[in-house]
Length: 332
Image 1: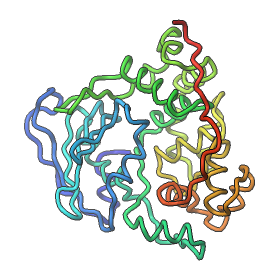
Image 2 (image 1 turned 90 degrees about the horizontal axis):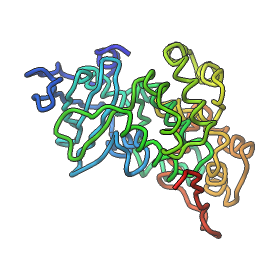
Image 3 (image 1 turned 90 degrees about the vertical axis):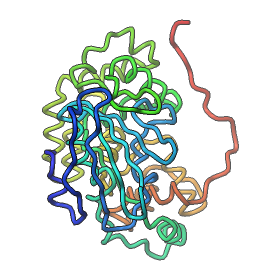
């Protein structure tokens, strides 16, 4: 996306950015703006879907302020945002990508998400969750490759393993984020940077060879894949572009669409837990992927929205056994 696109197409208001000294300087005065969404907005629940675990080096929340480091098309940026008063999101950004980050802010806060055609229907779980969460919007980062790399890292491992690997790789090979962050934050590597991470680093970070090879292959074709995904007209076309990569299947494609594009209909088929959770929430019993898709069919076009609502307020199946213990094959 280009700076200004979101503001020019959104119903919401975004004043001109106020600039001071060169924002590339580490402690320069930031670019600042206010964003006034034209709908209720639960800022934390909407934006923090972009975080990968509590120790994510790209995101944190402190004293009600969301801090986010990203590698924008114009360079590294740090974004700080909070609800200064009801219905007013105040934001500041540092770094070469500061203007892009502020122009993209409405999309990050769900401005592109249109729930007007969503009907929770008569199912009590979905209807109740929708009623309790009027400010939930589906966030999009507009950073396809970062979402893709993160999704590949999360393939077929526990969340704890995946988040640790993401944290190590971004910290080791990313860029230190500018601005007065409460703790050091890092933007992910450039696409070419992912491609040239040495083999020993993947191993030390805790990734298996199939994951590292998939990221390297994705980085080799990175710019063309990003263009294809951005130009695709719908979810199936985006999936086709993403799954043309070796090592990228439907689950990884859906996870990429969810974070990068805020896709309201993406369903992560193949997830270890998701079908069980959706089945239990909607019927009281577990189901498989086919059963999950059948249960979600009444909300076609908004299946990801239903999944998010269930995650926020649906019934949870009691745990009946030990959690999966993560395996660590790294040399000690």
